[in-house]
Image (cartoon, rainbow, N blue to C red; front, side, top):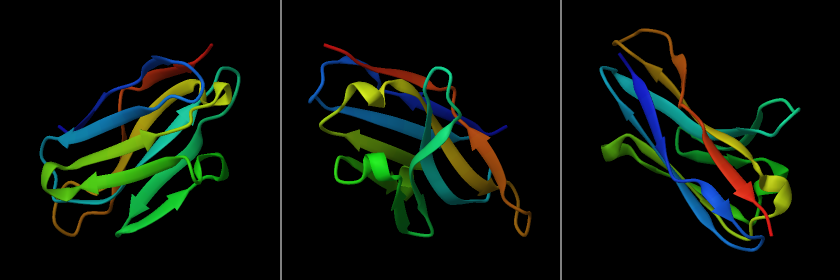
Length: 120
């Protein structure tokens, strides 16, 4: 059983920072990519940032403010969010693409979600 366990998040004021963490646990062969998505009320889930095969990709709202990083040894991914804005308020989800066994196709997993609220 594979699990993605998230931590971090909370309530901050505009301009402040937060760091989200996500650790993958369980039985799997290899993680190909990890990332972060978010879903604001009434909106679809959208990509924030992801790392696939060592290359990072950021959605436009995250560029210059957010930094994604991975710790392969810990099967972890982090999202450092600086200069937070009210419009960053959303539930943030960790995502991983991994194979559970050798030569098995990659499967997508999601974390439980964590609320980030930016409010004055």
